[in-house]
Length: 80
Image 1: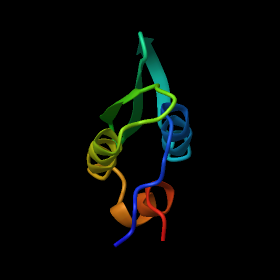
Image 2: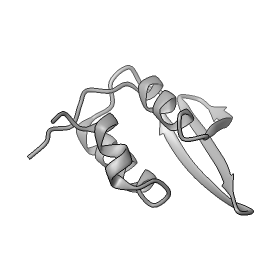
Image 3: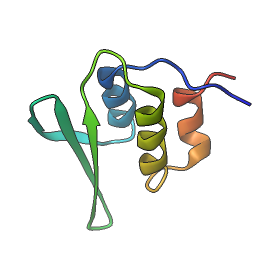
């Protein structure tokens, strides 16, 4: 079974930016990213921490997979 990588909030934001998400606001250490596809806003909130806990990273992966296919996201979040 593949293992989650060690990623920072900044790493995750860069990954999501590659899928056309943009940072629309930041409050404290949490960045809100959004993209609009066919008139529908897709929003994710990412904690901008130096290292994200595995559970937090898994939750972000699950939320992002509502908008981006798991097969596309897998290479960024998991080791082979």
